[in-house]
Length: 224
Image (tube, rainbow, N blue to C red; front, side):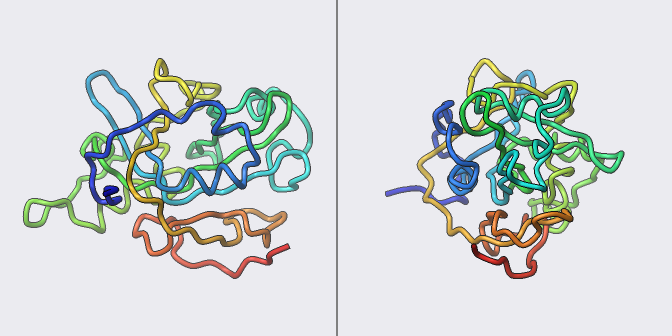
């Protein structure tokens, strides 16, 4: 029997480069339920991916690669499976992974994850004092750890200097993504969030009802 998403003892298997060498929409769908891992010395931070957005390269007006290759966005045009990190609004980082073959731009933005292990380390990185009730972290303060792209980046210590271009498909990296034998989650598509161009495309992929989603509900997407 497959284990459920609530079971944190699931054995992991690294997602290889071929996983990312596909259309960002396919990668987005398959990333839900996978586990983002940060190795920090003897500490392991892990969280299950519950919300992502696909960005389709030079044909997507909302993508960083829409205007062509630059020094800033070069990772998106590189081999699949690399971390693309950018700084936004002058106060937080966002983590993405490159998709499609080398030379073709495409990527997936990680918007929210559900903490599995290393929760106290995430809280310290976020500057949050987790409240504890009956021996367990208060759900409201726990949710605040990783329910958004900037929050999850801070919780995992993601910065452009540290992680941009890092290989997420290698166990020699300290940041990577694992699959396990947990059941595949239910998936829902919505429009993307926080952008001004191509806003109605159904390119946000979520695990509906998950308490760690950055936004619980959004406007309906226009399926094309």
